[in-house]
Image 1 (cartoon, one colour):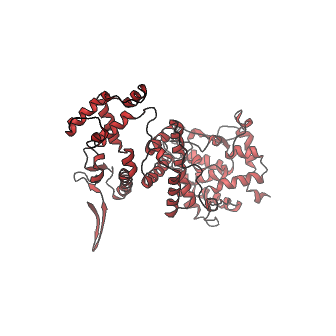
Image 2 (tube, rainbow, N blue to C red):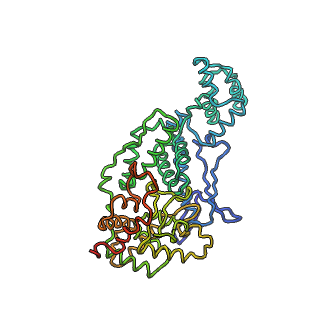
Image 3 (cartoon, rainbow, N blue to C red):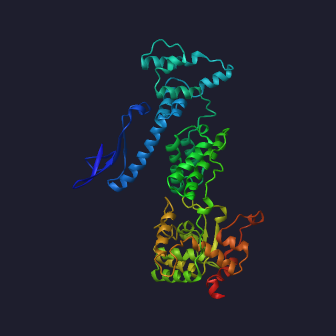
Length: 478
């Protein structure tokens, strides 16, 4: 039933599957389970999920995700593979396990018995299951014949039978199981971005092919999904970002469960991928001066972050994820300590951990940020709570806000972004003749050699004189 959200003359705007609770106005996703898949949802004829909001705009976004998820699940359950492989819902899987416990049977019981008796089936093992079918379905005398049993079994019965016959040491691994495994074992699995990116990529494959055991996916499925995403109008880099999580999800499950299959998403080629890559153009010295002046004129938190980006060459996430204790002013050379903080503040790689001297606009910005946050007595916590919290670091959100402002500055190219500060820093260090290994230490670039992994690396006071050379724009000083 459609919910009317707007009527204006002859125009009516409705939203499908939306239900409003009369007593408090809370919005729900309400949808009838289709008859042809209803057996997979025992005891349910309607799906009802609270959207936890009374706002129609927020509800609409959540509703769209739930509709897409259910459509993909139901499409998967209708597929020939689902019937052949006995695929079902998580609720039915749990019910199948509960049924075995109720009957005093254990997962893998039939498998281990067959192994012990060299493949000979022991009919006595199935007595409890046969009695259950007789009582539940009113079947005639149980004969132990597959065809007779299959005629009266529902999805819960079939799932219990599958679990009883399956080798529990090599359980069936569905794509959704592999997704959960990957997020569980990935050090960044609890971060909202990785979780969202992985969930989105897996949902696309499930919608396209179904939630199947990993061995059921073929190389052609990966290629077909690639072509499907390109046909939707996505550019090659976006398609790569969507396929990459699937490569990792499959790899984790294959390694963890020692599956004897090849990763279908390995080395998938995407035409024009390299040509589609946007080449970052560094800010010029004139543009850096314009940005520095504008930042000092405004002097707020956003401009402080941008100034830090300009004269440290750090990534946006590295700066917005700083804590008070990461800004060290009482030192021979003031610096920021870029490091991880739990599972919320993570870095791109091990080379990203570093101490970057504060010079020029970065030194001003750090002092400004500490002064503006002087109310924090213990000197701990997130430096910019607008973008950082104990839940997440909103680097993408911050980047969008910075780029929007930078485009408004006269004399600054609107095609450049805050990541261009990082490219500019590399050029400035080159022009200043800073040794390559020191450039890498400042920007967190490159792979460390075996020798470079020993010791603590360059101290801030060692790097500071080299950083000081780039305070005045290189080509202005030459």
